[in-house]
Image (cartoon, rainbow, N blue to C red; front, side):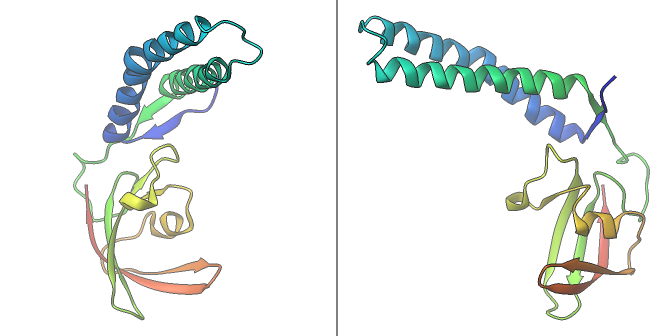
Length: 157
């Protein structure tokens, strides 16, 4: 059996919604576009047809990928386990020791990671440095621009 994929409950919900949208909206829409492009005749010089077929390939590949990943998904949920220790799914507030700037990150699986929404991958340097630590612990994160020290100010689930 292939490796399991850790997900939060929120991440599972988002992926299931995407899969449902692809199957119920995007797939039927692209089939309609292909039928329309076919009605224009000669396929060899029909750019609309080829573009629609390319989009169909992308949609079908994404559906297969999501079905595979959802089939291997394992929900990891520590929200019912009160703890100030950083684990998968935790929201962790950090204070940069040099600038005083604070940020809150959520530690999620690779599929859910999105730095724009402060969701960091379990395999990222910051998450690896945080796992197992507690409020008031000081961590060091090595990045290409140097080492940054952070103080953990809050852990919640």
